[in-house]
Length: 323
View 1 (cartoon, helix red, strand yellow):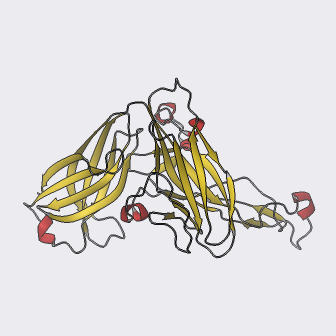
View 2 (cartoon, rainbow, N blue to C red):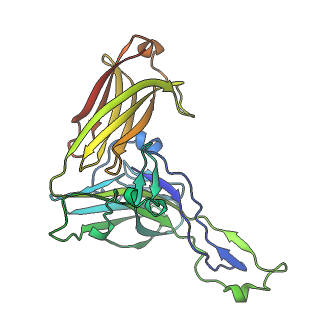
View 3 (tube, rainbow, N blue to C red):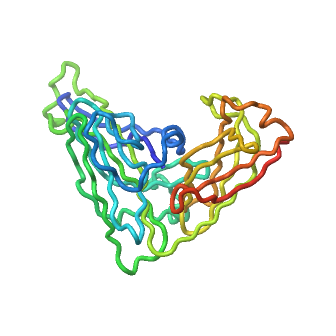
């Protein structure tokens, strides 16, 4: 899943009397929006683009950097991965590449693992960061320039089989934050004393998944019902459903809802990570679909199709009679 974020950092000196670099927290999207509309991306970065347009499948944040692909899966057959960065702005940009651990909630949100206080819940997440190495960790990109970050497995031979996950974060570095005056020097430099400046640092993250040994996955679809569409959807109706997952591997794929051969709703890029046994999703109906196709008495077929280990494979399917 791709997450767009603003993150907290400690106070930093700037050219003002006191510069505070606050990366303000924001909610993390639940794999909709950009993930729901873009085509499936490859599991490793493509060759660096030569034009001003980002490569196909790239994900953009609120800043000026694109990252591709949308997710990386490394397993026993492919022990290397790569992440592509692309500066779509005309100006030069500097970016930090770091790793964070996130936990998925049953409604599909991602929250920082450091904010989870329940030890039992924290233990459900298996971070991949200790098992990975990556380089470089900070890059400077001219306008319309690309850079590849190599990701390598650094796991011991006795590492237990299973799935491990962390989220690579690409964070823009403001050009005028580092250096500057100290608090002591800054005092008295402004007529009214010390000032504070808010400097946002925009970024974007993607999941990097490491699978060691044999992993298992079982998926089922449960409790479908017609529901109001989420705010901002073009249709007023949606289908709410629960994706149930068991086994040692996460699920990732696309939901489609059809009446016979007519697809009336779909949502792409839905993941259910290993720390949750189920995820609730709401899939808006296509605004162009005839409402009679999901009226009372109609039979709908809901399909969850893999876009991970076996692309195109049906992970789960169920029929639903609209009450």
